[in-house]
Amino acid sequence: MNPPNRQLILMADDDCDDQLLVEDALKECQTGDAIKFVCNGEELMDYLLQRGDYSAPGSAPLPSLILLDLNMPRKDGREALAEIRRHPDLRRIPVVVFTTSKADTDVNGLYDLGANSFVPKPTAYDALVKIMNALSDYWFGIAELPQPKLKRL
Image (cartoon, rainbow, N blue to C red):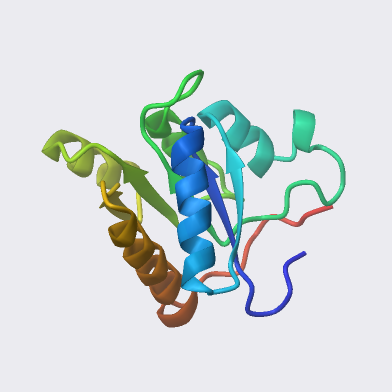
């Protein structure tokens, strides 16, 4: 369980370099927010539903926010988002699509699937730090987050 005022971000992204950059950027923001990573949509759902590698009590704390890449193996971000939004215990978790795509079809389609926000990945590290800071400020400082429906072991 996370200490008070410390939020957990779960990032689903198959690019290890992107994971490392986001982790470093979040540390640089000094928000105190924690981050965990999964590498594809199937692993994301296993984490959220505490299945498989995440079935041990305490191994998969419920995230306050999901950062979701689109193009991942096994189950892409679109499929994972649709599954999250269909699940009555998961649909309240805010999902920010964080991807290299800027295509109008992706933006519109993901909002139609229930994305809370669509943020293109920046190419410069200083821009990434600003984005991580803004996401933390907004989701954990300004927005009122719903109480989770799902109880954790």
